[in-house]
Amino acid sequence: MKIIAIEKVILGVSPEDIKPYLVEETKKVWEFYQLGLIREIYFTENNDAILILEAKDKEEALGIIRQLPLVQNNLIEFVINELHPYRGYARLFGD
Figure 1 (cartoon, rainbow, N blue to C red):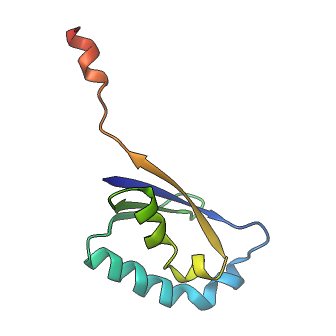
Figure 2 (figure 1 turned 120 degrees about the horizontal axis):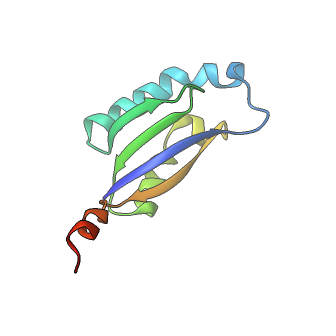
């Protein structure tokens, strides 16, 4: 199942707080990418990370996210949602 994880910086955390962990964070993201757990990663215009994960459910995705150094050190958190296929095209063809 595809899961989208949207980063949210925790209030009061500065870029200087995050900087010491960025190399370890990048290593862990690369590890998960190589394992196929993180399928895609993007940044918004606000530099918030958007991760597309492959996991059996939200709980497994949360377990992956919790291993990231920035999450472990309470510097960022993620909003996690399951992605489901769009089924709206069926409306074009009736019942």
